[in-house]
Length: 228
Ligand code: GLP
Image (tube, rainbow, N blue to C red; front, side, top):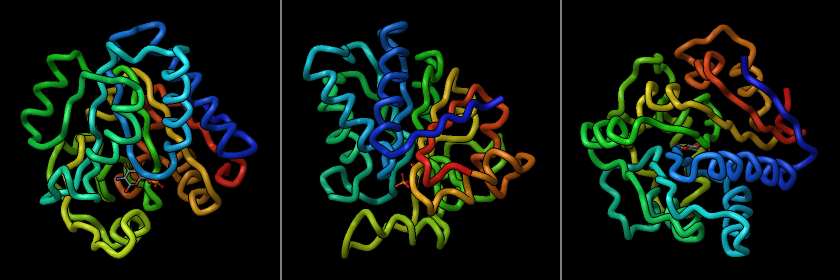
């Protein structure tokens, strides 16, 4: 049964998310974290970076796992999601252990060897996607290459200014995400309210891949604008 917590604004949400992530890492310093990019978690990552710099949190033994990546985008391209994750999360938190997503079979094998994901930090696609598990995705959809839907091409356009959005991507599979021992879904903004409502209240359906999180140990952190 998911827990929904609503905050007055994105700043309060980020603070609470950082508290939960830090608590996980205090309890298990070698925690394996699955890490979303996108706009929503950026204030949370900035707060984590502040705490790491202040010596209030130590991510030195954490493993950061990449959630998704475009195909055909080199890592020094401004659109590289690995590059984004490195700048916003890995480097500022002082993380040295990472699992990158470049080959699905290698990725899954690395995760198995690590014992799976302890905490998934997720955003919600405006079309209900998780990572790049686009609708329709069933709970068994593996780590794989996908072609982005028009909705995701459109929402991702906001990230890259004049550069075209790559058409294809790799995503961690649904079992990787749904198998996390704990998941945080960060949702902010009025434009996410309807899809969050569907995610939490509709019977789980491949048409809203995030709805399968209903069956997992999920905490949803939403700001007031996104709260259903
Ligand atoms: C993107 C990414 C996801 C992200 C989601 C929400 O397309 N593939 O990893 O969580 O969509 O993004 P945002 O937080 O910018 O709304």
